[in-house]
Length: 299
Length: 236
Image (cartoon, rainbow over all chains, first blue to last red; front, top):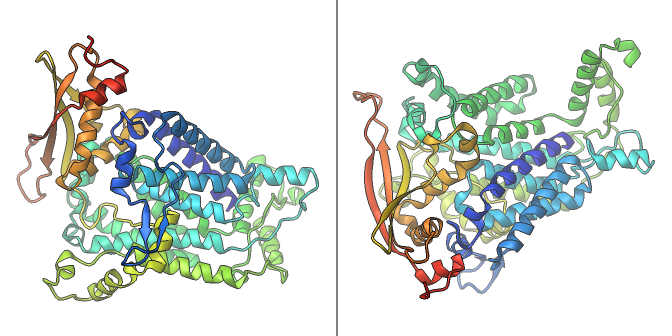
């Protein structure tokens, strides 16, 4: 969870930095998305009863705020929270602030959100409810140095990490199911179309990859990989191969299509399938390999 | 549940071999693992059910509208759509908290229409100019990366269903093109350019032409424009 926190915090920082560059477009009253449009796309209150007698508000600290300076200050606050979460400094409070900040922004400008943003929001919420600063963090580093934390690893419950893993599977499971309703996926021709949408163009790919019979391979291959990511990934002997196939899928999409950060965010979720001791052992093997220490000496 | 799945290890360990790491791993599956409070277990179960019921796809529109009999998984999805998704105990938690989510990447079918936009802006003195909304195809790779939200936004707001976005969109274009208080923009016409991807089994043109549709004409709100620009109305 510590490594997941560090990478996801960094990606959320990049994500919000990209929003900040065009802040005027999305958050000012002279932009494309003035504040009153927020309440037209998402209702501010959720009614729990048919007669509207009970309702709960959405998390939105900026509800009704249209002052550009306040909005920019809040954005900087979220960026700082993302950076602190990434570093694991004041992690508990930083991750809670980050989650509230992300949810606030998403509830305000829901029409500019893409799948990657939903991964960001859900991940930020999981980081806030998990003991995500307990490992791989500056908090722990300073605590050990001041002898406030034991040098030996502390054990923490796995339920937040399992929730992240479950949510990752849910993404693949529901999208595969949804695709099964579409005629183009069933007939194996679906990838013919996105490859010809010029608004998604990124780097060039060899021509034959977007022609038949490769279209059949990429269409059914996508369905197979996504289905495996939702199911077989829990079967440990196959886990590595399933995750590798998922990385290849997202790697190809990231290279060929302009869908910023989505692939990186999804692959970061894959970390949740590995337990802390597996990640530690992997780091240790890497250290031993590249520091070229004899195993016996290092041990 | 948490006991069964063991635990994370915090801090760096000085083990280097796989065998040593595995030995340590087995050593930390100790009996003094933190106990998970029953309320936490209840929350986890509730959360899993809530996000699953919300994220499950809708049945086809024909089934929802009772124009077709549900077949196969449609029955389950219809039950979920009509019952579980309407339970306040779930949506009353997911919507306010931000855990709402649905996943329809390129589903049920990928988009088959390439779409972009520009606008014709008419000024008070009768001159016209074309405002180019960011078009991904014409941008450099780094610009595409950071401007993808503009494409997504336009994809969402160009349809009739979201026509309530058109006036503020056009007003913003007027604001961005206004430079002279003596000849402010008075009218903005939004223009959609689109191209259907040809079916794979049809003859493919080298570059099919884009169709153009002038879909909304907006008379600029001069009071708002002048206020936003910091200009004074009527003294220029």
